[in-house]
Length: 125
Image (cartoon, rainbow, N blue to C red; front, side, top):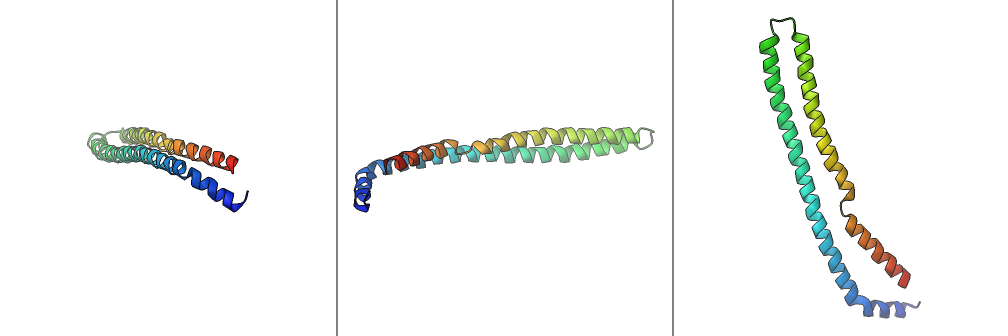
């Protein structure tokens, strides 16, 4: 194809291309809103996890000191407190991992639409 034919083809299809670009921009805005909600949820869960861990550390550490200081169960209490800390951290970590893995699918519809449009344009040129 000569350059003039390509320019003529693009000129005749410019309105459709602009309309398609507008649709892509609208889809990208919608997906960006979803991604922002997902990231905000991740931050909220991370903050909640840190708050839980901090409060639990303080409360259980104080409780362990109060109860087990003069008993023979100091080690058992310390192990129990440690297991509780690990359990809370694991729950928060699993939630963050679940939300983080959803990021792989961010803008999937936009990428698919752009790929199909590029394939169509390449087939016609």
